[in-house]
Every structure is written in C-alpha cells, then in structure tokens.
Image 1 (cartoon, rainbow, N blue to C red):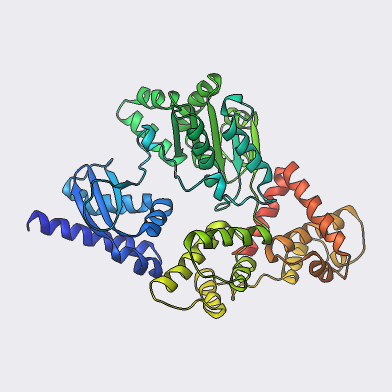
Image 2: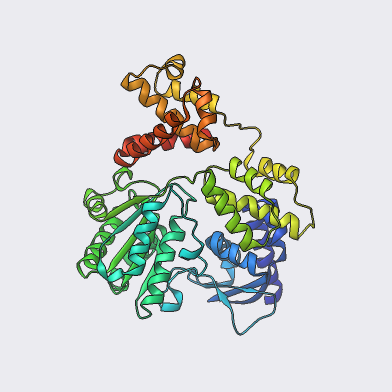
Length: 448
C-alpha cells in the first residue's frame, strides 16, 4: 500500500470514529464535508467547512477532533503533540486558522477566543455579580481588587465566555501582558508529562512567567495530589507577584470534594461569584443574540417556545439553534412552530419529560418530608414556610411561569408572595452552600 493510500485509509478511519461520537445532524452538517488538506508527523490541516462550522468545531469539538485524528494517524508516526489546523475551504492556504492546542504560550496562542467578548455576553439577574466582578478585573487588572476571581456555576451557563472576555479586555488594554487560558485537564497533562520526562521545572517556569492565568474547570483537580501540589506553588507565586488569576468550577470551592484545604482557603480569599440559571427573560435575550449572530429567520413565537422549553443551560439553547440552522440552511426546510417542537423533542426529549408546577410541588413535598396539604396551606411554621418558598423558586426557575400563575398553583396566594419567596430563596442559596447544592440538585433531577 502506498503512502497516499495509507493516508486516505487513516482519514476514512477518522471520519468513521468521529461520526460515532456525534449526532447524525452534525455528521451530515459538517463531518461529511471535512477533507484532509495536509499531513505531516507534526501537523494536520483539515478543511471543507464554512466560517460558522469552523467556529462551532473550535469552540465545542477541538479536543475531540484532535484525539480522533491522533488515534487514526498514530501508525503514521503522528507526533502526540501535533498541531491541529482547521481552515475554511479545502485548498491549502498561506493563512490558516489554528485551533488552540493548549500547549503553547506565545501571545498568538494564548487560548483566547475572539468571539467571547463582554459585548456579546448576555448578562441577566443570574450573573450580575459575576459579570460586574469580571468587568472590574478586565477594566483595571493592576488594581488586584479581586484576586483570585473564582466563578462557579453549572455547565453551560457562560463561565468560560466570561473569563475569556476578561482575557480579551486585558489583552486589548495591555498588549504586552502574557496571558494563558487553559483548563485543569490540560494543566494536569502538563504536570504528568513534566514528571514523566523530568521537566517539572519547565512547567513551573512557564506558568510563573504569566501575567494573567485563566484556568477553567478546577473541579477536575479532585484526587490529583501531585497536580494540586504543583498548582498550589504556582498559585502562591503568581499571587505574591500580584499576577491575576481567574478560576472557574461547577461548584463553590468548599463543595469540591478531595481538594486540599489550603487551596480552598486560597480560592475563598479572593472574590467568589456564582452564575445561576438564566430566567425566562434572559433566555429570550440570549436566543435573540444567537439568532442575530447566526442570521436565522426565527420569529418571536419560536424564540419564546425555545426559551420556555430549554431551562437548563445556554449550551442546550445553542444546540437547538444549531439543529434549526442546519435544517434551514442545508436542507432548505422552512422554520415553523411544528418544526421547532420536533427539534426540541428529538434533541432534548421535551415532550416526554414535562415539567409542571404540580410535579415540582410533589417532588419538593417528598424531598423535604412536608405534607403536600401543608405546602398548599396558609401555615407559617418555619419548616413548612421554607419548603413552600423553595418550591415556588424552583417552579419559577424551571417553568418560567409568571408570579401570578405560580401563585394560583399554591392555593391562590398573592403573586407578591411568590416574588418574595424567590428573592428569599436566592439569598439562602448565596449564603448557604449546602442549601445551594440541594436546590441545584433538585433542579438537575427535574431537568433530566
């Protein structure tokens, strides 16, 4: 078999592998359009996508694509640290668009995505404090006012967007700053390789030379003692030298199990801010923003349907819009209310998992061992009142129903009662990590 034949077979293996990892719509939309532009042991260039799908692959599947390419081309002596290049079109070009591989520290390879700016982050009541703190750091990083800045929140709520926006703003104001965006898994791999190849000092020197470190998903350092040890020393040195650190996680620092106490204390010494789930109005604003970016002819009725159906995270909303855009632009299908409902059912199984206020009240009743009749009553015992308020808050979060509608389901109470219940529950969640975790777990269980 010739080298060309072997390369062709490896490429076919890659397409087959990645097709099994993705939904059929994505396979049809962009995987089947990919082509191998150039291969050598240190670099692979692939093309065949437009600007939209280039952005989509870069933001959501870069590591998956790289992993599958390595597995498919490994027998051609592909370097494990090969550079992945994705370009628009199929012909080899002088100017290529490079997908970040998280293993370089030059200014051009700082890991920042130019699309994740403050200007296109839709801020709502769910992210007010986190957004304000991020803007403060971005506008005046040398003040060291919030250092470290720790952003927590469930998957897909915009933590990565926000810390990237900080990085881009600081880069704009301080062109000579050394900035690095990475995630804890990549950091762990660097530490492991440093130990393996006796280059731990090189890893330390790389991070200690940085002016701004953006580290995503710190929760993945759980149970990794050597990595935590390295990060602790790097963290201390950066803070001591007044270098800015911004960290994200899906939980508050103290909720991350098997994370060293000294790290938890360091994280809590700065600013800790949480991004919650967006309310209905914020979800509508997010969808409108995405629709404008993607240039999809989506009317208000369809936008409201998606906003009332997808309550979990922004990533789910984007996934729905990707499917709608693909059907419209690639298959020339008209966007109707029925077609949007079909996408919601196919992607998120919306119809078969109805979330109603009645079901929420029943689950809360069981969870807190409070009689359903007591929740619906006028009783003001502390335990009953607190359970009722939590049920009202979760009803608002998951259904997007108005305060008067929710009030009717709780025995015809006044809508201001629901408003105050939601406000009170948010305050509890901000002050008490245990209550916060319990309520978010209930929300996740109901959202499945």
